[in-house]
Image (cartoon, rainbow, N blue to C red):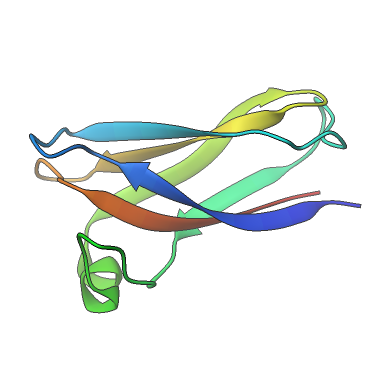
Length: 92
């Protein structure tokens, strides 16, 4: 049985071309589990839902640690990003 949830990718106030967030507390995850993450159009203190819909960002999940969790990576396609962005994730 897998799990799902939401995390925040934080590019900081100064901005950066990429960011990462560790998802922990996933005791059932195995090294062979499949993980997926995507930008979720849910507002944060820094960005509206509409900004989530139009931003050019790649979001991927990887670096699985069995019994612990994984990492979500976000990367801008064409600019420096600032602030926090909502990402959803699932693994199985």
